[in-house]
Length: 343
Image 1 (tube, one colour):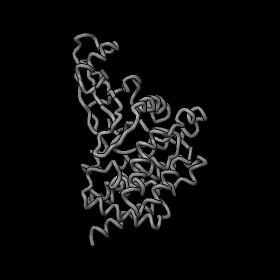
Image 2 (cartoon, rainbow, N blue to C red; image 1 turned 30 degrees about the vertical axis):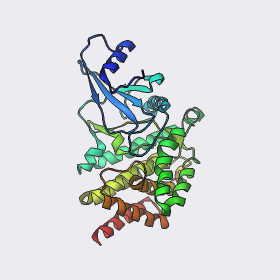
Image 3 (tube, rainbow, N blue to C red; image 1 turned 90 degrees about the horizontal axis):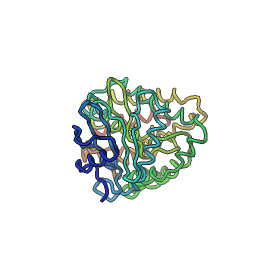
Image 4 (cartoon, helix red, strand yellow; image 1 turned 180 degrees about the horizontal axis):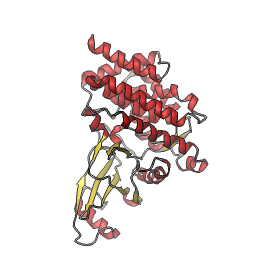
C-alpha cells in the first residue's frame, strides 16, 4: 500500500523504519495547508526539533483536472540543495532527506514564530525592507546561477514540470478562456522556453515566503529549472499588483514597494550580459500572470468576482499597447485601477 503522509500512524511507522524515530518516542504531526500540489506535514519531536515533509501528488487539489508526475519531488530535492549554495545565507531551509519511491522529501522546519508573507501583506502590513530582501534574494539566485557554469545548466535543463505546472495551467489554459489574449499568451509560453539565462524558481511569490526574525525564507522548488529569469520577476510582480488592486487603501504603498523590489533586483543582476534585454519580458510575464491569476487554473482566492473582471479588462488594455518600462507598467496599472474604481 502506498504511503500517505497525512495518515499519521502510517507516517510514524515509516519514520520508525527509517531510523528517524525511536519506538514509542513522543512526537506530534500537523498538516500544513496552503499548497495544492503536495501533501505537507510538520513533524515535531519532544525536544523541539522539527521537520517538514512534502509528498508530491499526481493530481493537484484544484477544481479542474490538473496532473503532474510526482517524480518532480526529485527536482525539488536537488533544487533545495543547490539553492542553499546560491541564495543568501539563512534564506533557504536545510535539506534532510529524499525518498523517490514514496515521492517524499524532508527539510528543516522554520521555527513556529514565523509568518507567511502573503498573510502579512493581506493584513495590510507593508514593510519596504521585505520587498528589498525579496529583490536581493532572487537577484542573488539569478546572478549566482548564471555565473555557475554548464553543470548547473545541465542539471536543471528539463522544463517538463515548469511546462505542466506553470505554462499550461497559467498561460495556455488562460488562452482558451480569454480569446482576446490567446495570441499574446501562446507567444509568451513559447518565449519562456527560449531563454536559458539562470536558475528560475518558477513559484516566486509571497505565498511561498516565510518571515522569521525579520528575514525572508523561500520555500517550494518543484518547478525550478534553468530558463528565463523574467518569469520569476513577472510572477512576483503579478502578486504585488493583484494585492495593490485588492487592498485599495494600501495601493500607493504597494506600488512603491513593487518599484523598490524591481530596482533592487536590477542592481543585483545589472552586470550580467542578459540584463539589458530582460525588462520587456518582465512586463509581458507580469501581464500574463495577472491574467492567469483571474482566468487560469490557479486563481487568486482573495480577489472578488468584480475585481477579477476589472483586472482582466485592464490587463487586456495594457497588452494592446505595452508599457515602455516596468515603472510605466506600475503607474499605468495603478492609474487604470483607480480610474476604473472611480468611474
